[in-house]
Structures are given as structure tokens and as C-alpha cells.
Length: 206
Ligand SMILES: [Zn+2]
Image 1 (cartoon, protein in one colour):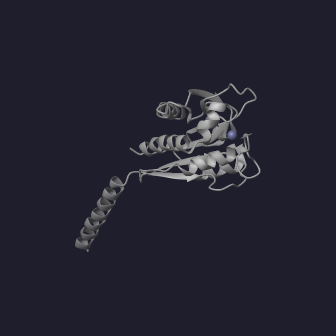
Image 2 (cartoon, helix red, strand yellow):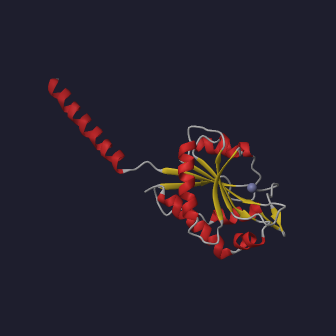
Image 3 (cartoon, rainbow, N blue to C red):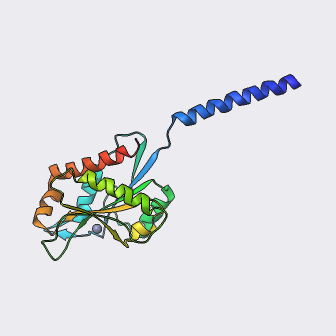
């Protein structure tokens, strides 16, 4: 009986060591949510027949992870209406490592232009992490010389406030500004923005 006990003990130890090895070898996957803004009945900004919802969808579809340890999730893949509450609920079920909400701005003042990066105004447990990631994203995006501005700001946006994760909202430029309109609607510059975001996200898993 005693022999059987030791035998079982050794088997148990071997099995648990085996499992430990497996968990060591596989790193924890990093989950990133791309919040594709607006959609469906909500067009967002519209200038000269071009809408924010279609541009952010186009651009988001070009964002890919080249790192198998980084998993991408999208709040929408097609032109559907999604409330902010539905987006936050989807995100909070996933409990991701980062939320990146992608928007395009518009203003009556057509001189207003450039990229803006926002984190939540209200302090929460993710504030420091969000700011840290926003700073890195800002310097990554500034590699594209056509993107001007690039300032970090705080805002009381719902999606930043209601998600339980580090969260950043980017306004890629002003559709109402002639120069920004060009790079926001041009396939080549759209690809460059998407590539920068893809590289940035893929690097999070390194
Ligand atoms: Zn928007």
C-alpha cells in the first residue's frame, strides 16, 4: 500500500511539473480591441459625401497583428449601428489589455487640423497605463510626417470612462480640413496609418 502511495505521488509530481513547463512556454496572450467608431444609422462626421464611419471601417480592416501572441478584436466588422453601451459591454466581457477607439474629427473651423490622442479625464486604475501607451502610440504615429499635431489630451468620452481596461481614443485628423481630408481619404496614406498602428499593436506582445 505504501509503495502504491509513493508511486502515485511520483506520478502526480511528474504530471504537475509537466504542466508547469507547458504554462511557462506559452506566454499569456495580449488582447486588443479596436473600437471601430460610429456605423449604421450613425455616420459620424460627413464631408463632401465621405463619412467618418466608412473611413474608420476601411482603415480598421487594414489593421493586423503580425504577432501571434497579440489577438485583435473589433467592435464591428460591417456597417452596423452600435450604441456606446453595447461597445462598452462587449469590451468589458473581453477584459482586454488595450482598447483603441478610432475616430475622425470635423469642425466648423476648417483651419482646425491634425491628430489628437485622448485618454480618460477621470482618474481610474488604468490611467497610468493608458497614458503610458498613448505616449508610445503618439511617437509611433509621428513617424508619418503627414500626421500633424499628435498631442495627448484628456476627455470625458464614454468609451474611455466605461471600459475596464487601458483605453485610448484617437481622432486621426479633421475631415473638414482640406489637407487632412486628403490623407484620410487617400489609400496610400491610409495604409501608412494602418501599418503604424499594426506595428505598434504587434510590438505590445514582445
Ligand atoms: Zn467620431
